Length: 352
Ligand code: NAD
View 1: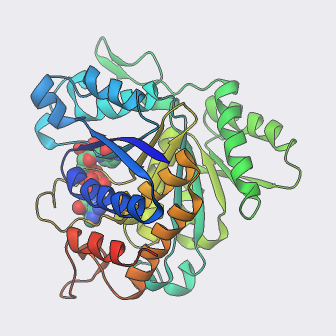
View 2: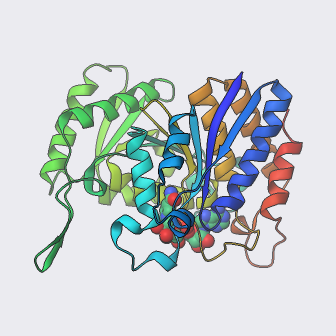
């Protein structure tokens, strides 16, 4: 099969972790007899520097010509004072929108070997295996009007029932392949948007009598995520709540650097680690590439229906961690760690 993808390494540690994910994909393609057709383009700060545009036309065209996009991360402090349309993050929001990727799937599973890497007690995190289904194209990040209005600045949280319904269906469908439990997270005690959210989710749930639905306010969910993370199966939530809760889930399972994501719903899938460009560690060769590598596995599964290939990457990651290999984010001070490239090499060596 032809695996036709565009890689957008982006800024900071993005290129470092994407390089490892691409190496893993090359190894999988060779092992399973596929042809990897890879185009690499610029997004974010590097694209602003070269083209004065965080998502240049040629980048977007390449993405739309592929079956899937593998993105590293965007963001650099140099652009902190730029106008909104000339910030790296604008490129990210534009590509998500252009690809119609409204369903952001963020699994957070505890690898058995990493029970000691979480800041939480092993007895609390044991069995943690959740999937956060985050709405990606609505809410505060896209709502209009936005920007300066006289002496105020506004952002708008807006959702239509149709937008809530389509993401809710994704969550319920995925719950059917898991433990059949959906926790819908909102702030319906305060926000009208959340009341529409809750009411719509209740309506969708009627079509899924075999799936248990519970509702949780976002503040209490944030607490429950650290108090009883193993009790969650599928968490369904809106854009900003999902952004925040998934970083928290990353810390629960050991490191943000481990978390992968898939953004689906449009014609071209978008796959990216959950973490950002981590300017504090960029260029040092110490970033954890596993979030990017596991995003590549999600890409094979969701965009190419290559389940065995995806599973072989996931198993290789599991074996690498079980043998004790750790990047620095998974260690406590003084413990030995491996570099980004060494971690990538170890995963490739464990592919079966
Ligand atoms: P971040 O996710 O980049 O980093 C948070 C912390 O986690 C840092 O201490 C970092 O060193 C660590 N970390 C992150 N990924 C890691 C990895 N793979 N291995 C080891 N450690 C890792 O978040 P931030 O510092 O708040 O943001 C930095 C920049 O990234 C900002 O410009 C922000 O806008 C951008 N950002 C981009 C995305 C994206 O591209 N999807 C997501 C979040 C933040």
